[in-house]
Amino acid sequence: MNVRRRRISGIAVTAATALGLGTLSACSSDSSAAGNTDKFDVVASFYPMEYLAEQIGGDHVNVTTLTEPGQEPHDLELSAKQTAQMGEADAVLYLKSLQPAVDEAIAQSDVKTKIDAATLTKLEDHGNVEHDHGGEEHADEHAEEEHSEGGEHSLDPHVWLDPVKYAEIAEGVAKSFEKADPDHADDYRKNAEALAKKLSGLDTAYKDGLKNTATKVFFTNHAAFGYLAERYGLTQEAINGLDPESEPSPARIKELQEEAKADGVTTVFYETLVSDKTAKTLAKDAGLKTDVLDPLEGITDKSKGDDYVAVMESNLKALQAALGAK
Image (cartoon, rainbow, N blue to C red; front, side):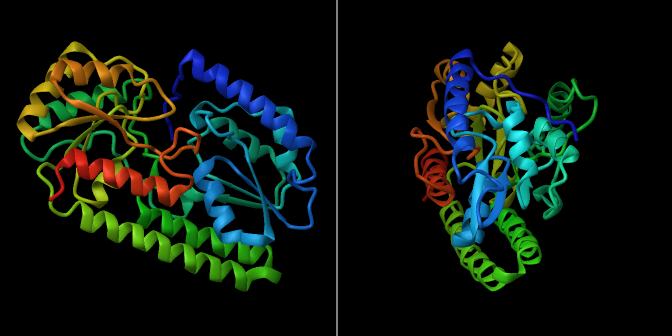
């Protein structure tokens, strides 16, 4: 699967590097690093995997993450220390094709339990998901433009933004933990059931909260919310497709302005880890508001919530406001 690599701004790179190196040296010399504890040591590739490991593992696991808070996960490069640390872990939990550097390191690693979240649910292609109302021609153009680099459609990796699919992954992770660490299987099962209830509650909140809205269309900086849109009967229109940093063409901007009028769109969403410049330009030109819709690739001080559920609840409020929920 060919997920296009994404650039982040120079400032973000510098911040992530400083943060990554600082935290990394601290955690690799720390006794809690993978492989050095009496617990079941799990290396998670990035935040949504880390959250699952912690929720399901509870007191029995020691979780370390390869992607530091504030670091854009798609651009992750691993240090030799991180790769070595992975080799000492009892299990590694990742989402294949989201982070090529991680996939490569895992393929070469002799970790006994390798859990690929992409195999625990069904990934889909949202590259050319467009309107049902007469947008076929622009759908084809947009799809062509979006996938011109790879020459083929990529499956969308942002599966954790759909609570139902995320729950499917959680169930598979729990089974892997039970098999790899049978002494604590009962606790893993109980913890997984508690997590399933939380995710089911979140799904119900989204269903009820987005059932009756003035519009079903929302604009985002990049196409991270395809699964969420599909689950709750919404239409995501991404300014930049899979790449949040590329500049949209003047024709695309004009098209989005017309669409905003036709579909009653009020808001252009951007995210915390990438530049908001394009979203703000479009919003200004089209007389729209801007707000944050968080793709939950990492939790930082800027996140509107301190864990997955809290940020998803914040995303729901933002969507309700933008879509005119009644």
